[in-house]
Image 1 (tube, one colour):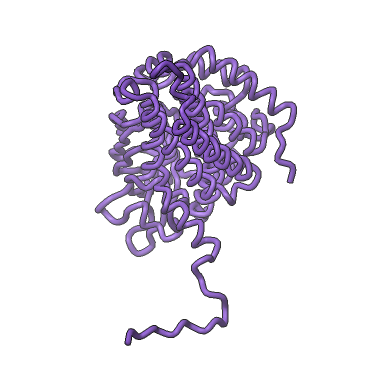
Image 2 (cartoon, rainbow, N blue to C red):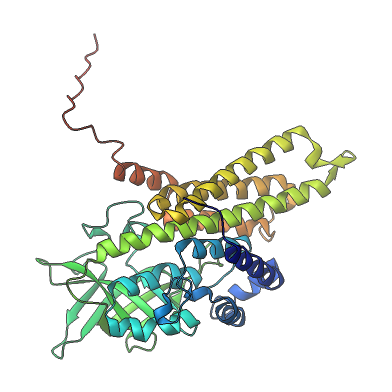
Length: 400
């Protein structure tokens, strides 16, 4: 495997870093997240038209760029550096792969071209705070308990007499759900005895659809509560689709993309901290010259670089996405915490820019982790805790 980036990828990185460096300072980010959309619509259109970011995961047949997951991961690493608020992850990493794999030819032809052009955005809606489980990152998603069941929870789907579908229920913590043009809703169908989870398409103007943006810790990653009150919907694909497998495959790639994004944020948090300690003086010398500070920064550098290597490897082999995401989230959490510490008294003020990275670290681990569950599930999938076939069980030790 050649893990080196191509000249085209490096050119995309430079161009994206230049654009985001001009448009995504901390003040601009704070202003963008407080708009109704939760992001800068003008910047989103610029990124879509000039770089084709939302089309990175869309094949050329449907007007996309047709790139590999590595290209999307590279773009998200740059977005993570500035904590770019945008529908890129919800649209390109979560929704587009599901539409591509599960959608009919007509659905792909209708949705993928405008998604690739940036004219439409999409969001994945699963009930409750179980997005990581639904994507197969922290547990097995084949049983379907994560989607609720019966009348007690989740989203229910029933067939109409005319062959359509109606949805009722609620989904919380839907990434960019308040502004998405199309929702991919996971819903139960078939009744209690034959219950199974399928994905449905819901348009933003569907009658009975109520969306409310939620107050969250990390404003740069907006979330919404979605209520479906007898909403008309279209089945994504057909009833025989293996939704759990599609979600798990999407989760592996999304984890690799998220890992790269977290590494970008961690690297920038570290760079900002180094810049600060080199300029802040105490006792007549820069605090960065003290040995204790140097040691702490050196440890952070090693941890961030190790996480970057894991993220790049997962970009070429998404099967390792869960482990890479665990390492990247841990690196971001530690780096963001140390950044606040090393900024001293000013770093502890809630309005300081260092807290943007701290909030992203905490919120991402709540949404896609925690780290120990990501690692435990990856170990379980790899069979690390399964005794080899034919091995004799260990004898029980009796205390004397």
